[in-house]
Image 1 (tube, rainbow, N blue to C red):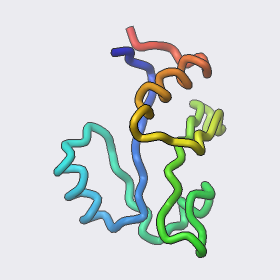
Image 2: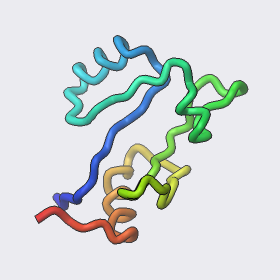
Image 3: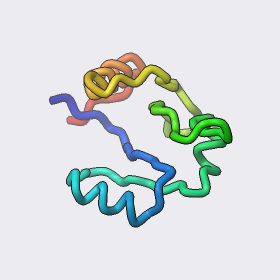
Amino acid sequence: MKKFEVAYFAASCDEEKLNQEFAEELKLDYPLLSDPGRKVGEAYGVVDAAQKFPRRWTFYIGKDGKILHVDKSVMTESHGTDIVAKLKELGVAERK
């Protein structure tokens, strides 16, 4: 499996306790951030007042904090492979 020089995390609009239980159940190896007030989700456009659940989008953010790409067509079955392809396309270095 290819490894890249990236930091990654997931974000959810659920409460921290529920996210912690979910992360422990799945044995996640990355942080799961909680945004129950939906302010961050609103800022990134993944939630709004008309939508109960956040959209499943992946944001690729450069070291300078600028958004390089937003994948708005996340397919859970192929997302890992899709991420690897996008990282290559964006020129992200593989970890040695």
